[in-house]
Length: 254
Image 1: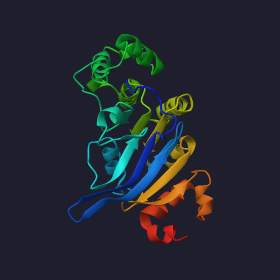
Image 2 (image 1 turned 90 degrees about the horizontal axis):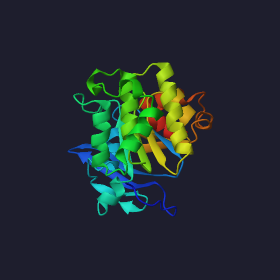
Image 3 (image 1 turned 90 degrees about the vertical axis):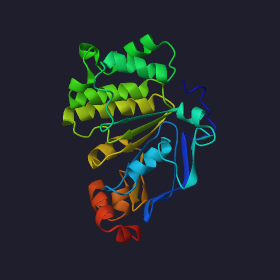
């Protein structure tokens, strides 16, 4: 379990992260914070450094330089405390397909050392409308069902920091909207923060309080997704995204 909430610290504080692979610099001096109740979009074209940044925050990758703190706990010197406050969901990281929804949630509940696992699992199954197929193996679920199971897993330990990498990719519009509503409710009704990546700019504008645009491993732009386009002479957030992908140097100078 995450433990007590420290209101003195931001949910996440990332300082000057850098990660290289030989001659390739994947992340180059990235710094940002996430406050309580805030959903921050981490945006950019493929290869911009988004997933590398998330993997460093998850402790999967170690940065060459820089620091990561989760509620004031340094990820590298206080890893257990930091990671106990964190969880993750992505469409490319499904739960084990040979286990049922119930089996998966119970096993992850044990891994996260969740109190009252049966009660917590039952609550999440009802919250994400998983009851009718809770005994089905995850490998035969639809994309929408798998997404809901992944999100239920991500909520098991009441994370203070929730990392969502393309959480609604491949979902139909109705299911995607339902997922966005649930995640938005989680952020507004808790003291948690969310880092969200997506290529859907409509979705980003709807759910995110602030966005960070990455280009070649650096944060090029930052701001409110509803006002950022006009600040840079664009009509929509999608136009900003395209400009970041095609002409980042020109956009950064505007």
